[in-house]
Length: 221
Image 1 (cartoon, rainbow, N blue to C red):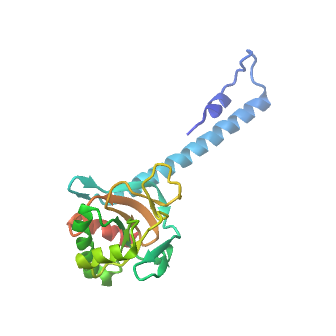
Image 2: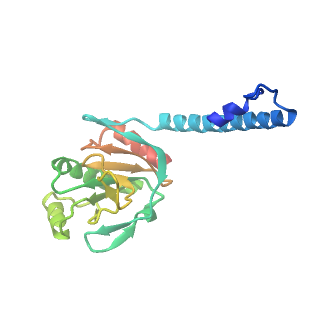
Image 3: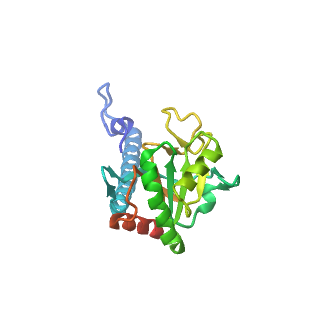
């Protein structure tokens, strides 16, 4: 896009009424050319992004719909704390499609969605799909573990974000966490190439046909 300064550079008449000397005219032409090239590159990038957005399948479930992130981000190198006390680096899970789900024990909708995600992983483990559930509870580890046992979650790897360094809900994001909690639960979708392309808020039906199309897109991308 041309900036105000670029538009002013196209003028061949000075504000004092004189004609622009040849040297200044050449500079102006260079400015215009540079602006045109910048505009062309921006338009091409915008067109490519728009084409990519169109290729991403839509997904609606209940009153919620999948939201595409713009710009997309690379999967961040951040530590996740497991219920077993071990940690992993999120970026080490790249190479396979990931559904990164954020939930909490106090969230009623999470009680509906977690079993669906648990079954989804159990049925698609051989296909390479990874489903990771991160608890946003600030309570102790046993509280989360008891919830998992009570709801018979057996396939999902469960991690914790006890200090809020993975996801944020505060306006200022003081801890600079990479994932925003725009609802609870909320699931971020990460392609096999490691790009976070968007998120799905609310308890979604991940067994639906449109969800399957979106997951297949993650595998191919």
